[in-house]
Image (tube, one colour):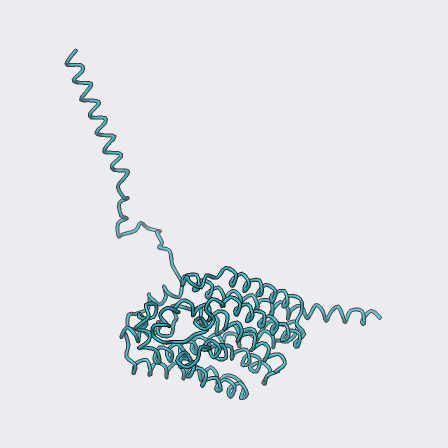
Length: 357
């Protein structure tokens, strides 16, 4: 009997040891996949701007980051007013000129890059003192001031080539914006309204797009559109400026975020209302139709949601709201295109009764 009990105990202990070994094995992290992946295995590809910049050769990366190719939100915000103007200038019932849209897209990348280069050349000493901007190539010492100056010359030369593809009126009009591009970065040292100067700079395409199609500006359409863009910039760049307001106070840089303080949402609401009214005036002066005004209403709803849910004391929320303004611009462009196509339907409705008489 004693021998039987001893045997049973040994077996029980053996089973318990096996259970403990299995439990411990389950708790361990899974073994890493060997370097040689099985045939047919594909790694997921990422085509985000940041990933593409990281995949570029090391010597090229500081220049791509200097022109902010890894952060395309700003390029979209520069490009979209151009698309609005090109879309409004299209013939009734026609799509926008895709050649011009492509040309202005290239120009937006180059001019946004040039603007960022100028900004970083002016602000390299300030950028070193701000956590968010300390890693910028000039502030971090990845490239020299001379190298960035040469790079700026290359960007402006390519942008000039794009501009020379337009008519003479547009060449002169486009060249006139260069003074704003150069002086904008200085405004934060002088006034609490640098966002206004940025608006005047970033929305120049609202004038240039129309003149590139028509040969000159129709001011009753272009000026309200330009004003709408300026008001829009005051909204999104004030939100953007709230990210850095603590650092701006320390280093002595001004912004509308510091000027408006806790009244920011009231100011943003006023700018949004002015934007919507200007868009309506511009639409009426070029005989826009129902889809256009529906898009303007959608833009208003988007802006209202942005402002209502904005937390000006959370930098991550400010960035999220700022970046969402690309949706605002795309909504309006879509409404312009559909509204222009709708004009063809309206003209048919007018012509049919006359043909039946």
